[in-house]
Image (cartoon, rainbow, N blue to C red; front, side, top):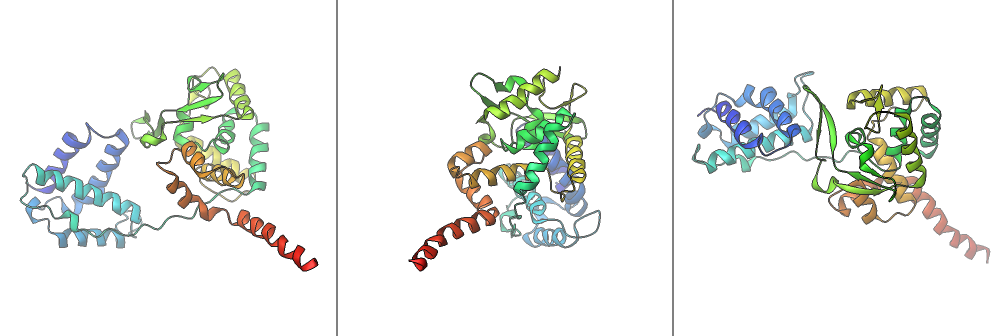
Length: 310
């Protein structure tokens, strides 16, 4: 059996029934764009470690179909996972005599530098959003004080808010697909979480509830908002305020950084963010607090000043 025929069977019989729609779509896109083009006509038993590693090297060198440059390590690692998973299942069900894909050497992923807004930038954003007639911008405020991902925000309904207990239940997310807006369970199991809401944020949500007739917190003309549309709204907001462009996810990073600056313990922050464990939170945000570290060091050094005076 040639590889492209097996990939089609693997996708429809093993991935589609067991994975999220988004995972299936991402795998399908990677297979159609990259894998079939280079490996699709090769017999399963002839996919040697050398052929697979040369394919990975090509992706890293000039695998981007738009500009002929290399794909990111994250993207290549996703493609490697497809190779390994599909070939492992093929071996398990005896479509091939050997399993060689475990010999692929993965590219090292370099953690991206966390970008968050300064306190002054955050103040400007908050003031504008609260004074603006576009109530959907309240979502920016909500993200700044809950750490929600954009998909989680746009999937929120008023039924996910317990106004008596002052908590928010995060049980779903949404994304834009070629077929339209899709809602599904959150990114990971730990992303299902309960977030306590400060009274100020609860008031913001109550204002939204009084304003809209839609079931969703963030709506436009009483209809749910697409992820791309809301991202574009945020881009225009930053441009209007003359703040250097940062992605919407920077609101989540800003929340985490401010929380640590306020001495929130890492375990609590990890649970609010929906991380699998506190180590992920610590590794991700420990580098984003340089100014806070400077202030703490200067505070510590005041003891030296006192000793010198004495």
